[in-house]
Length: 370
Ligand SMILES: *Cc1c(COP(=O)(O)O)cnc(C)c1O
Image 1 (cartoon, rainbow, N blue to C red):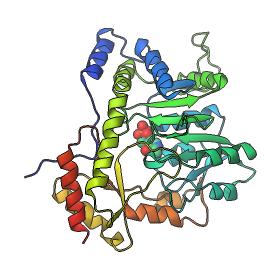
Image 2 (tube, protein in one colour):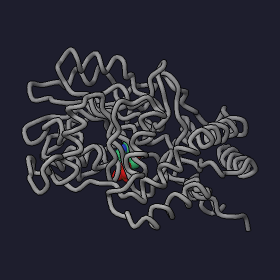
Image 3 (spheres, helix red, strand yellow):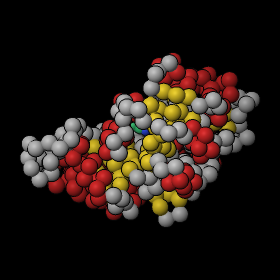
Image 4 (cartoon, rainbow, N blue to C red):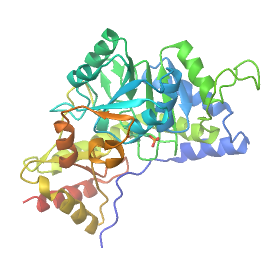
């Protein structure tokens, strides 16, 4: 019997363990303590961000960004049809309306032309998702947002470390968000981060995430806030992850490249990044027309062989929950997102994945697609 290979597995070393232990030993186990500011400062330093504000997960990071930009009922937020549901849920949960548009024909990221077509007088923001570690056309989308006076929010949950020119993803929008969930590029267990260049917005994010309490006057509230705080223990793990970040990135990249070596590229499609440099999250492959109907059978076949895999995200228009929701509007043409969704699947990718495992997974995929 071959060993079970999960889709993902966080990379935890003695550094994370020691930092977490220090946090516990200090008894600062809640959301105060020195690791919080250290993690935020080091996160900013590592990726050249002006301000990083830690939060409890990547979903509330998006909600907090929307809160800080005063987006709510009556406002429209443009999002892509193909992404993890946290993106749309955050918009609906702040009371705004999600306007769902297609991705590009040759990149699974939101299409700038479709954004322009969907702008109305109610549009306040665009959330662009750098899906699968692949950047959106960030420069063009940023121009569009400036031209139409819209806020740009980047959902970078899957793209930590991707870049265009000298800028990492997370530096293009007014507020940008990361997830630090266990299957993301680095992890704090649960966790997230909001990034901004604006000192005013940084203060607003910090106030809202801490019950809307004045930063200078205890128990004096200036906003109807939330509690979206990260704990000092999570931040301690995060500090360790940043120390290991270069190694994590290098290993993820080399696993990805091993897949390219072993997969039969006549049978599966690999998406090259269209804008700048990608980061490496889960392995993603796409089936061509000849094999597209075999996807679910391939997923079962891998499962029988002790390999965890999963279909790519389902598009929002395919789920009746969103299709029939009164806070969701779909644009007419969603063909590219539907096609990517049907073609795509995730394969295991994590820093400790072994070369021989990649070889085995790839040869099973190659063998199945005949
Ligand atoms: C993972 C993910 C999120 C949500 O992050 P959580 O930390 O799990 O709440 C949001 N957006 C995208 C695109 C994601 O992949």
